[in-house]
Amino acid sequence: GYTIRQTKNGQNNQKRTIEMKIRRLIAVWASKFAGYVSKKMGKQGVTWAGKIALRIYPDILKEMAGEVKKGIFAVCGTNGKTTTNNLLCSVLEANGQKVICNHTGSNMLNGVAAAFVLGAKMNGRLDADYACIEIDEASTVRVFPHFQPDYMILTNLFRDQLDRYGEIDITMNLLARAMKMAPDMKLLVNGDDSLSTYLAVTGENAYRTYGIGEKVLEEDAKEIREGRFCKRCGAKMEYDFYHYSQLGAYHCPKCGFSRPKLDYNASHVDLTDGLAFDVGEFHVKANYRGFYNVYNILAVYGAADMAGASLENFNRVLGNYKPQFGRNELFQIQGTKVMLNLAKNPAGFNQNIGAVMTDREPKDIIILINDNAQDGTDVSWLWDVDFDRLENANARSITVSGIRCYDMRLRLKYVGIDSVAQPDMERAIQDKIQNGTGNLYLLVNYTGLYSTHTILKRMEEEKK
Image 1 (cartoon, rainbow, N blue to C red):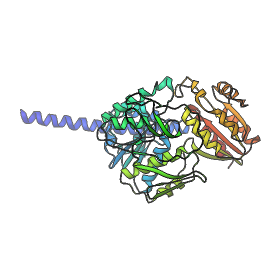
Image 2 (cartoon, rainbow, N blue to C red; image 1 turned 90 degrees about the vertical axis):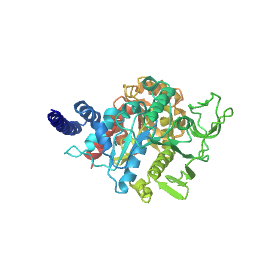
Image 3 (cartoon, rainbow, N blue to C red; image 1 turned 120 degrees about the vertical axis):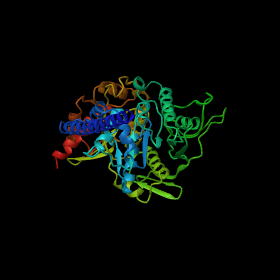
Image 4 (cartoon, one colour; image 1 turned 60 degrees about the horizontal axis):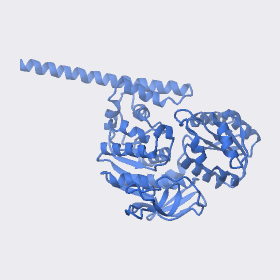
């Protein structure tokens, strides 16, 4: 009787294994089909692919993550996730590694699942050395039950969409919970950010830090700064200098909490011709605009070094890297240079304004503001952005677009800057291509990004 039961159990287990393999295969095929159809219809479609896969086979993300051979990177933080994640992927690929990556920035659970299933082969299996996965901070506690990353990069923590995320303490608590779920995960945190540093030093994960150890910018923008009070004791923090927002050299006069010694320190930062800086004896050179990109590049350098990846091709990768979906993404349309940038919160907007101002040539600017659920329906954050700086941007025209274009126009009026409202983004772009300076900057918040990108790609293709 024991032998018969054992045989039946073995047959049942074998049957379940076959059923699971079939379900996984169906999940991969269905997801790939959904992604293909969405692409043909001009829709992003990535999150649908992930949702379908998880619905058909809930264990698919856990199983596929387990098939990554060398390591999984999770990239979190308010700003800079997509650029850091995609650039790290490019560095690893330049070393001959096979990498799974959610390039489009779909960073909640369904988007993360989609990155794996869409990267699988038609036999349902995954062949990857690494995975570079951008994860929304609030989604980490939903993603980490499926897999625990080997590394987490934490770029920064700024106030972002209060009606979606709440106060920044809520985001910090969620990240702290996620870190406890993955005790073996190694952290790489922005040491210039007191909030990110606090999470690292009060947690149990091993960590390293990166940052910019010397004052670089002479301009002292009057920004809204998070982290002004020490998270450890509540006293007001003191700063030797700021880089921007709350990033800089800080210390608490009461309890001694301070910026840690930086493991990856950018020194001799030069912004005159693109970006250049040193990390130890390694010299980094990139033709990028925007001081914030020093942090993005430095994070990638540190992550690659922590994983033991070769840095031999690092500068070549920076030179060849093509920004994706509105992260300093350049288009050429009928002789007009069009730069598309995502700006979704005060810190990000201020840094984008700074990048625009490094170009002293005459220019046109279009600002698109939506208030869909993914943007945050509360647009009061616009009053925390230093739009008055645009007065010195050498802008021949400023156009406001999107659902809340009139709120944006009112905001500019209060700092004495004239603008024209054109709710239709495509018409606004066409007008500046036909009648503008030939130098066009687009600053858009989240839900306007994909539609604007689609418009620009179509215009670029039509005029070739």
